[in-house]
Image 1 (spheres, rainbow, N blue to C red):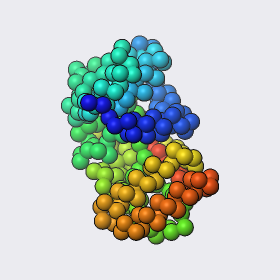
Image 2: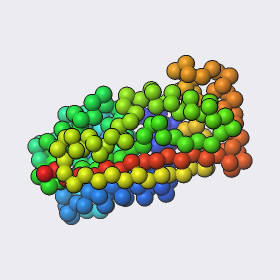
Image 3: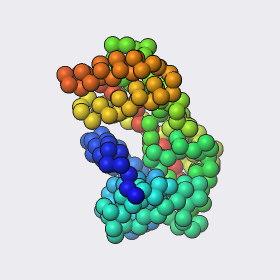
Length: 247
């Protein structure tokens, strides 16, 4: 079974923006991989980063917990090394890779430190780790109703297992014994049509969680649809990148 076409389209649209493309490139630069070195992309999804890393000369391995996402990735790159696996128990040998990259992963885990301990296991000494993701309390959305907007954003964050994982990247790496830890923030600004599914999804999630009423969801979503139609939608999303070296 493959992921729903709507989910695949949403992921593709988000990953294809200039901001997302530039941010992925930044993570590849921070890996500082020698030509031909092995690197694992944990939470690889449809395999875009695996393909881009391979194009840079790396021996890229994609791992994802979702069999459906791995199936989609294989349909797009049959030649790629793609494996079903958990971030806390990777299908890799000790010290097998020189680079470890994870995006859209740690916020899904009750204890992100477990994944970082596993990263240390599979990384060779001197290997590099790079983590990427947004803070789920950090959606900055323009609206005529700031109070309702805050409620919607916080309700979405509360639905995430570990919504503050990204702001904790640096300390998590330090606590797990990584060295030369750095942290960066990159803010993406979105104003186009790609925003609408994201915005209406936020409102629907808040309503489903009981944080807002159906009437509030309808009113807020209608405002955001009109903003998109008029070219006045605005969302700023700080993304956090942390990098480190395995001693």
